[in-house]
Amino acid sequence: DIVMTQSPDSLAVSLGERATINCKSSQSVLYSSNNKNYLAWYQQKPGQPPKLLIYWASTRESGVPDRFSGSGSGTDFTLTISSLQAEDVAVYFCQQYYSSPYSFGQGTKLEIK
Amino acid sequence: EAQLVESGGGLVKPGGSLRLSCAASGFTFTTARMSWVRQAPGKGLEWVGHIKSKADGGTTAYAAPVKGRFTISRDDSKNTQYLQMDSLKTEDTAVYYCTAGFPYSSSYWGQGTLVTVSS
Image 1: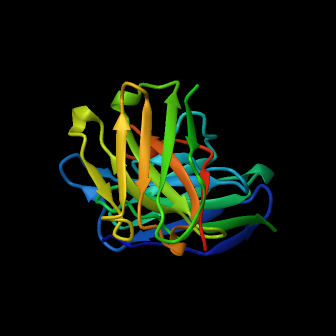
Image 2: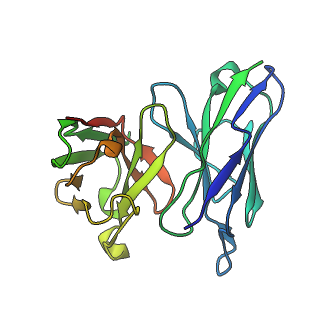
Image 3: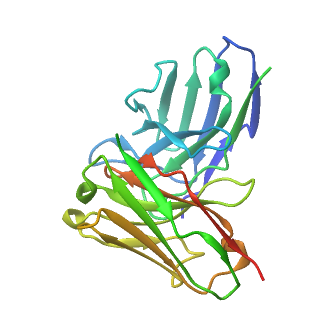
């Protein structure tokens, strides 16, 4: 099974500053036949279900603000929020869908400093 | 607008059974890979399993903790996904989310239904 590990577990960033969350998989989630990384990022606000932000590691879901971006390949991935807004306070999860079970990272709690 | 509505959660004793339903609307259900994801109180997300679209083979896959106890099915004529949960354990207590993917990442999520396993 693929283990997903996020860092840090929690993060406090000032409004307007950059926030960076990392996700590492225990094995590559890059499928060589199509050169796609089978990795997604989700945002979960308190009392709400998760919301898809990024898929294929770097493709923004429709309607997601462009301050959110995903990068990385193979086993190391990053979610970046370029200029933190108050509404971005949430827990962020990465998930691999390369092989079953489609495991999630443990989550990163993002707060305002 | 896409919508997923879960139902069937509640309180059940250890060893008992429960069936969750997920009614879908606003998207082409037959093309979606439907999944269940759970979240224990105050914890992270745990993938439970999925059922592929019929065009993709219609097969199921499960996480190890639920394999052999949980069964995912779908009725494309009713745009509904089901999660049959048998031999429930206290550690199955969680909010259960229904999700839809095209075909992999979960694009749509329901609001979740709480399952509490306790004597």
